[in-house]
Amino acid sequence: MSGGDVRRLADWDRAHLRSLAAKYGTPLYVIDLERVRSNAQRVCRAFPDAHIQYAVKAHTGHTVLKTVREAGLDAECASAGEVARAFDAGYGANDIQYTAVNPPDKDLDYIVDCWRENNALTVTVGARDTLLRLSERGYDGRLCIRVNPGVGAGHHEMVQTGKDAKFGVPYNRAADVVAEARDYFDVIGLHAHAGSGIDVDQLENHRELVQRMGTLAREVGDLEFVDVGGGFGVPYRKDEPPFDLRVVADATREAIGEISAQLAIEPGRYIVADAGVLLTTVNTIKPAPKTTIVGVDAGMTTLLRPALYDAFHPMAILADRGDSPITVTGPICESSDVFCTDRPLGTPKRDDVIAIGNAGAYGYEMASTYNSRPRPAEIALANGTNRIVRQRETLADLTRLEKDEP
Ligand SMILES: *Cc1c(COP(=O)(O)O)cnc(C)c1O
Image (tube, rainbow, N blue to C red; front, side):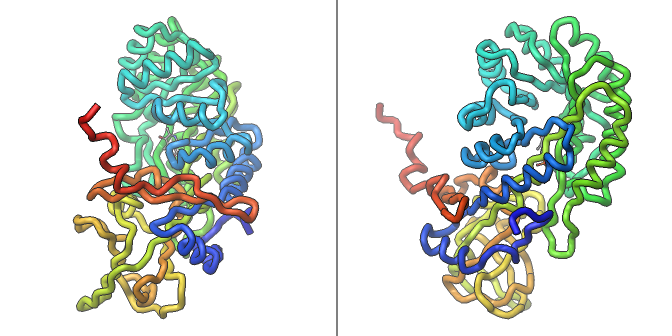
């Protein structure tokens, strides 16, 4: 089962999830490393000739990074912290691409130090100003230019990065920036990322982006790779079909045309989303006029996507409780702290465990301690065993960095 194209919330073993909640407490993230591995392998099979990098920001857990590395994927990192984590998980500089998005000085200092130790590192830059800041630090190594392709794709306008002027140099200026950068750097790649959650309906946008990148690659010539980003979707809703990797791979190869450089991709969500669930316990049940308000111990500080993007996550009570509509809310004093509204999940009893599916991507990563709620624990499943891979934060952790005594 763990090798199929799609893994839905209903495919998880309910009794097992209940036993994990009982053993480790909630809220609890669960990540299945075997599913991470099989997702990575499926991408490798669909894109046999491509350079495949995992967009680390989707899930930076140490065991996840190790699993992904062992499956043969390189690492695409968006900050100095992610690069440090990639090294910590065993990646070498030649497996890391650092994508600078308005990089703070501290990030550039760290990256240039890493490059001095091993100049196989690749830096992706989307602004001329960043090129100057790198050259001021003496960096003249492997450089990839991030292009703003003028095409966006994604499930919510906030994750459509392709059209956003924040990301990349404008398409019509890209060839000039490449030419200019070549005077000083070793320009080896072009990069574009349209945004997250490309689905089959949005394949036209993907094709257009890839086509533009192919055209640009032929214009500037002499490159090692053309990176067309990530954004492979996963079905969050029951009636959404699985993401068809083969269709996307074919469309990508066709759209890019003849290029002498290698195709590169950088999926994040696809690798980890359906490998994770979040378990949460019902605290409070309150009848309301048209629904039942169910308070749980996870909130927007545990899983932010519903509050931030209005994202849909599949949910299930891990007990048979019928199908009456309920509204599931967290313990945070914000009206956006809601996981679902009037969803026919059945009416739970206090202490029931609710599973929230597809929580492996951008779940723990976006967790915070707002309302002074410690971040949850995470456990990893592999080879029939389970173990804590991220300790649950404690109340003492909340003030650990705030003491003024020496
Ligand atoms: C976030 C991001 C990705 C991964 O996007 P997914 O939707 O998780 O696949 C890839 N590349 C860049 C530059 C990103 O910022």
